[in-house]
Amino acid sequence: MAKLQKRLASDILKVGLSRVWLDPTKLKDIDGAITRIDIKKLIKKGHIKTLPEKIHRPRGKSKKKKYAGSRKGSKHAIVTAKRKWISTVRPLRRTLKELFTTGQIEKQTYKKTYMLIKGGMFRSKAHLKIYLGQHGLLKKK
Image (cartoon, rainbow, N blue to C red):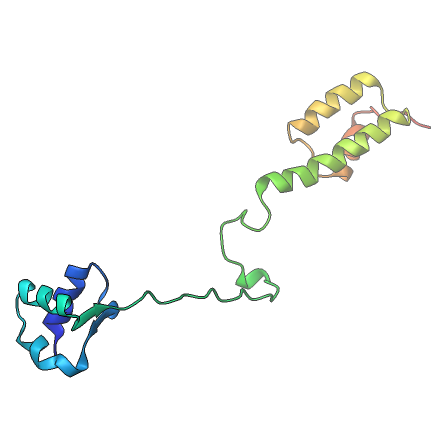
């Protein structure tokens, strides 16, 4: 068929092969065209045309819940490192403030422990309370 002509036409028209239309009634004339000049003449006559771009509709994403085996992406794609840090630090600071306002720890201890929390020393509230208890920083009620 007109493989060469289609390739030349796509190059001249600056479109892909799938967007080149060859007139099926004029296939004999198109087969006879073997140079770029011949192809350009056929384009001028209207025997070879460019088809409009195809419309691409986006497909809807699945609403299915993703479990451990089907998750894709990096380690922190689902929960970022920052979000994880926030969810650790905020409860620790809240607990420390509560201990301070109830008078279970002194101001000096509060400040030092606050900086330790900021430095990432404690894993959880339980870890914080164990630390304060072991170092004798908690006052008895």
